Image (cartoon, rainbow, N blue to C red; front, side, top):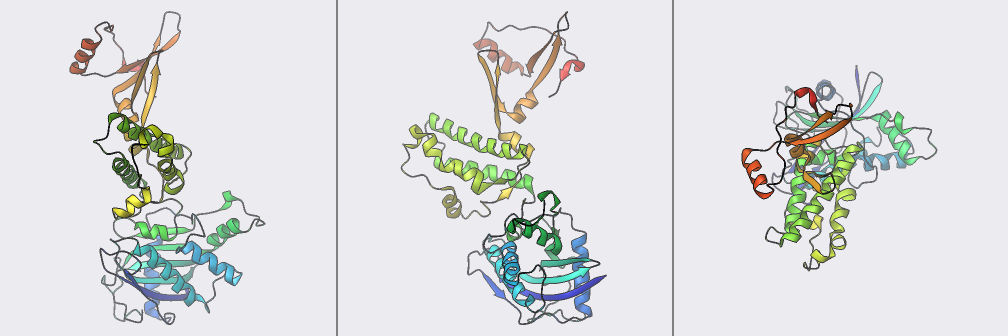
Length: 400
């Protein structure tokens, strides 16, 4: 059973392929939506979509970041000295929420506007605040005053995506962060932000609007950032640079990948601003003999802005498969041999064989697959290398 406490439908107007503070027009309403059967139908439909969302829940990563839901909610809690919403100031709260959303939308040229329902309702004993982006041409109409027009069909394609907040858990998280005397353990905090998508993925700017603690679509984002970091370092040290300079570029990339792998191993997200940008900022000090040849090093953020890159400074969980393709490892064999290569490449071309002698003493051999051409080149360069014919069965192979 759904009980609607308050609802309003604002609007954001934005032309496709534009960005910047002037690219989004906020059309805020003068009053709350009238409670009528159409509003009930609308909320029922959107709540159903939210409950069948395909994405896991999230939490705010921070409550003080400008122009975010977290900051607006935190300011509201502080001003009213309560975690309870009040219908008398709900309209003002909704306007602040849609203004913050407009700022995030303005940063992305691909974003387009739409109607923004901000709904406060309860289902059974749980209270929600839902913010959505509604396609104004998918089966129903909203008039110039933000009112749902009669005789409409609110179909399943109406909602492009939404963010539904469970208010009690939001309040508990905020109290944990802001009140040192609150008797709340971090382990007791539950996710409270649920995402609904109707096509493609949740827009990046909409995730930043929360701001989300862990960005969705981490595999895609891992590849995106690997490519972006590579492009930035190629701008700093171009391909026509001396060989020793390109070796330093490779070393810096590996340092970045190792930081990403470190975060992945600790089950923590990568925060580009905190984890990766300091590596770039320290390049000159880390490799003075190389960077003394470069009068100016373009900062990472400036490079991204100059090239109109979006979402270049965010939070994501590195995906193992994408990292393994680029992260190099170095393995020492004996006293004088080192094998280097990507984790993926080494795993694909080598295997460890467990051997036992007559006294059952255990030893290991690293076997690397070679093509006939590679073998011939090796023998040509090192004719002294020993070649043996051995029969290893599959039972001997230990795949680490």
